[in-house]
Image 1: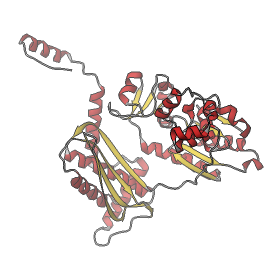
Image 2 (image 1 turned 90 degrees about the vertical axis):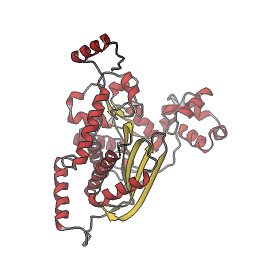
Image 3 (image 1 turned 90 degrees about the horizontal axis):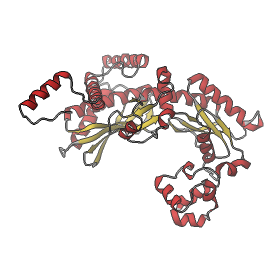
Image 4 (image 1 turned 45 degrees about the vertical axis):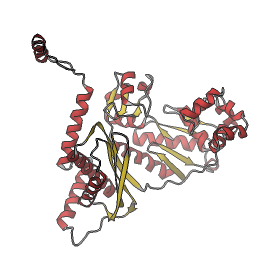
Length: 412
């Protein structure tokens, strides 16, 4: 089961004016990449992981949205909860994709009927369009789901696997990237049917072990099981800047904002962290990380100094920084225990009050001033970069004066 243009669909639930329009979700600067896009934008050649600068040039009328991961995570959990309520075994492959093993369901009233009813329930309770493919294994089901989009369902029985796969492009097979695709196309292999007829020994000599796996997938063979969904062991946040920076104060404020948001997420999910990792990437793409083990905690005032300390120890080269990030790992389920020597009842009541407000009004309803100032600054920078610099009448007059005085000038 795969949610159709998931991020865009969530945005459209909150803003009906986006319906039927080309929408792109991703970074606002030219350095950003496309996280998701609507089918209307795809008609112009826009696709996920494309540089935002290229996406804007292909579809200049697209509505670009930064995106809200809190909202996407919320709706993803809603879908997962519905699936968990009905499916005997399910695997959450990504934020918008689930594999379900419903072997034996045909003994009751039919696998396709059960799948169709589950799909209708998801759409009814979440308002999100979702497509599904029912077949004998993961690979065929995933390919079938892609063919069922948008907002459709399809069943491929065992006897129909080969006829279904044969005419499709080899690009449809998971694991085949651009490099492998061009290699196979240079050999005259364009369809899955042609790929499946090649001797497996030739595929192994050509691509090694991956060649054998790809050959099996082309023949509809995939023994990999649906692995019961388990909770993640780490959470993190990264930010790539519009321009490389050496603003240490701003970087420290950004880390504070990241930690604040991640710590609230930990408390909301009743988890504790034991390892804090800070990451920086310099302008020459040199990437460095440093981590520290801490007593299990989910308190901002404990984690923030830790992140800033790691950053100060890590940033020694005094070069421009392209990216900064923080990650919490070693997660366990549990609630924060008080440190009798440091934490006070006022501090605990403060956290409880702040978290209640955030749960009721949103994660950004209450935050530290440094985080707000930083977001406002970044929003202004992004807006300035998007706007075309058109000189105002006053600036034109000033330029004319400069011309008359024979000054050299530069303006955008």
